[in-house]
Length: 392
Image (cartoon, rainbow, N blue to C red; front, top):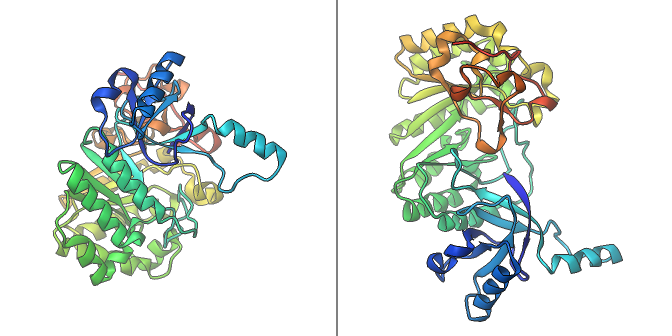
C-alpha cells in the first residue's frame, strides 16, 4: 500500500474517501459517499469550503501532486493518542490544518487492484513478504467494505490479500457480499493458504452463499507433509491445505495453485508438479513465482535467495510434467532473462504497479515491454538472476 504526502481540509476524519477533480465534484457528488476534492489554488479551496458551509458536509479539499482522480484513500494522522508534550502539541496545531499522509487503498489507473484484509496469519512462511502480527485488525473489514463502496469504476479483477483472509471468517463473507452488491462483474482473487477450508463448516459459510466469481490463490510448496510444513513453518499445514483444496473442489471453485521459487521448493519442484497432476487435476493452473526479497525472506536469505539461471533444467522439466498432465502454468515475478527462453510465453507481468521497477540493464532490452521487471526493493535484497538485455 502506497502513502503520499498531502494537505487536506480541517475536520477530515480518518475514513475512506474518493478523490475527485475540482471541476467534477459537483457532478460526482452523492450524499452516501465521502470526497476529497483536488485543489491547486486558494480560490478552489475556498469554493470547496463554501460548499461545505452550504451543507455538503461529506466534502473536503485536498492538495497533493501525487493523487489521481478516482483514487480511494484514507487520511492517516499516525498518532493513536493525543500528544502530551509541547512539541507534540505544536504538531497537533499543525495537524488541525490537515497535513500528513494519505494511504491509497485503490488507484483506478493501476493494472492490478487489491485490498489488504488482515496482517494476521496462521502460517509463518520462510519467504513471507508481509510478516504477520497478532494485533486485532478486524477494523480492516469495515475499511475494505467502505473502499468497495467508494470505487468509481468496477475493475476487471480485485484481489483480497493479507495475512490470511480466512481468519476473518464472517468478515470475508461480508466483503464478498459487498463486491457482489457494488461490482457484480468484478472477478475476485483471494490469496489464502486454504488451511481453514479444511473445516467443513467454515467452507460452507464462505462458499455456499451466492458470490461474485471468485478465484482462490492457494500456495503449495511440496508433495509431502514435511516439505510443505517446513516452508510454511506450521505442523499439519499440508494436510489442512489438501483438505481445503478438496473442499474448494467440492464447491466447484476455481483454484490457482501457487509456489514460490526458493531453494527448498526448487529441489522438489518436478515431483510437486507430478503430485499436482496425479492428485489435484481440477486446479485451473499453477503459478511459479519469483521470491519477493523483503520481509522474512531477508531473514532466511540462505533458503530464499537463488540464481534462477542455475535452475533452468528444473524449471523446464517442471513445465513438461505439468503439460503432460494437461495443467496450464505461468511464471510470475520473474524477468525474462532469469528463465529459459522456452518458458517466456508463460511469463506474466504480475508485480503490482506501485512496487514494479526496471534496472538500468533493462533500458535497451528487446523484451522489456513484456517483462515482469523487478521488485522496487531488489537493491536491498537480491535479483532473481544476473540481469542482461535480451536481443531480438
